[in-house]
Image 1 (tube, helix red, strand yellow):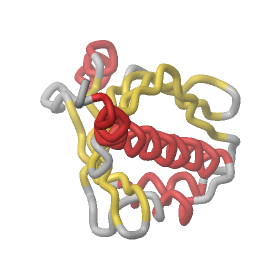
Image 2 (tube, rainbow, N blue to C red):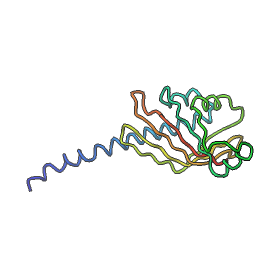
Image 3 (cartoon, helix red, strand yellow):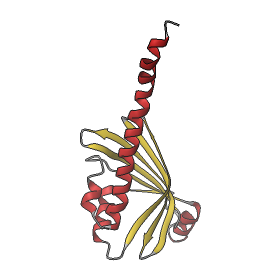
Image 4 (cartoon, one colour):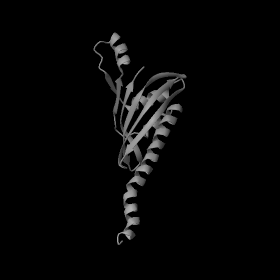
Length: 157
């Protein structure tokens, strides 16, 4: 069959995007690991390097129980609140007790240029789970590596 000599080239052409996506997933997983390590180390500066400069999209969506608790004191409270990674980095840097964020079921989707990361988390302060929920990051490949552009997470205190 005359097409047989072309099969290796077709395989390479079809597998190249998969290899690029696998490399991107590994690079993104490294960011996930560095994020967790920076929190444990109280290293707000390291956290800041993982975000796209100037990005401020950081939103907490209160779960039903957390929203109910907040609305007991503040009936008009919205079901979400906005903040910034800069505020979180400052908190991490200034925390006087041990803190960490544990990630479970990390899922990374990417085309090699942009990505979404989704996982379940537990935020632990002083050895106790302080908050849990789901978290998602929107990421972008930049000349300086993968950067977090936006973050959204649920809060179930």
